[in-house]
Amino acid sequence: MISAAHRPPRAVGAPPRRPGTVQAVAHDVLPPDPFADDPDDPARAFGDPEDRLDEPISDSERTELLADLSDLAVYQALLEPRGVRGIVVDCGECDEPHYHDWHLLRASLEQLLADGRMRPHEPAYDPNPGDYVSWDYCRGFADGVTANESAY
Image (cartoon, rainbow, N blue to C red; front, side, top):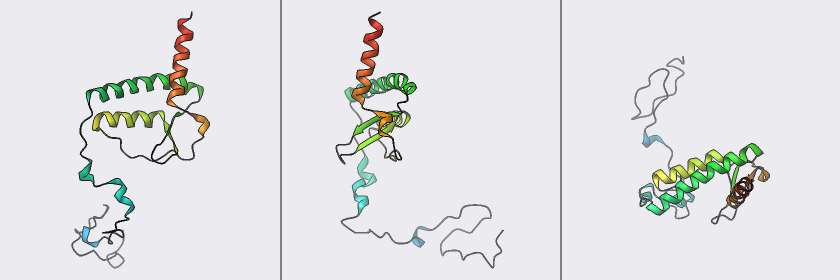
């Protein structure tokens, strides 16, 4: 335990320290926001959390999401044993491919179904593009498997 002589001073307005706990920091002792009142603040792209009160998804959107989740389960069952890690989606906003592991895409679709919006997430770290396929590839692969099985 740090002796009182070696303990840093308590910030004015901060709650008293209790041994063995994480110390709370009063809001007024935090450093100022370097982008406060800056019209070019990069966080403005996220919008104000109060502005995120989206309308609930429509019945047709809910039906489409449930179908996508069902399709995703089939695609994962067919392709994961073959080494496919997930789906790649071309982003219309940044013109970059986004690589989604099966579980991440499922979680995002379920979040969209529950909340009407997808939460931000970290992109895949250094993905191998050969491990991911497009949604259209998945659909074609599943259709091919179905056609092959029904031929017999």
